[in-house]
Each structure stands twice: as C-alpha cells, then as structure tokens.
Length: 106
Image 1: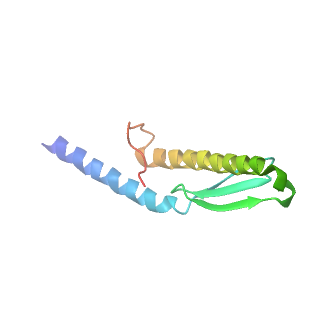
Image 2: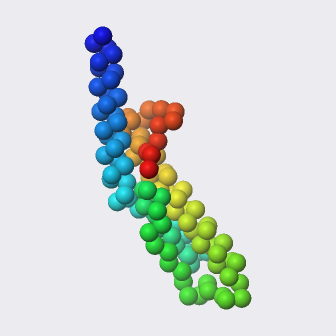
C-alpha cells in the first residue's frame, strides 16, 4: 500500500509541475523566419501568433502568393521552434522521461 501511495503522490506532484509549466509557457517566445529574415513570426508557448514582421522590400502587389507563402513558412518555423522549447521544458519537468501521451495540454 505504501508503494501505491508514493506513486500517487509522485503523479500528483508531476501534474502540479506540468500545470506550472503551462502557466510559464505563455511567457516563452520563439521567432521563426523565412525569405532570408524578410518575414518573421513570433509565437508563444500556447501556439499563439504574437507578432508578424514583413520587410517592405519583399512586398510585391503583383506576387501576393509569394508573400503569403513566406508568412506561412515563418509561422511554421516559429511553431517548430516553440515546440522544441516546450519539449526541452517538459523534459526538465519529467526528468527526461519520455512518457507516451504526456504533453502540455492547452
């Protein structure tokens, strides 16, 4: 019975650390870019786009499709970077254990 109680206590502590991590990730940011940094997208740990920066030199009204593609690429790059940050922070919380199905839910 003592082993079960210890396991439950550890699981509850892990759950509390994950909740704290969720709260902290809102303040973590990553910036992705495309087009040689002509388009930048900043996202937070909740996968929200915070800011888009577009250099004037890349704006061509005759080729809006290229600009749209660059914005998508920059956002995706930012999302990949923040996912790496989340993965690193989660590893700190779980002690590096890879627990299937355990992720920071939002």
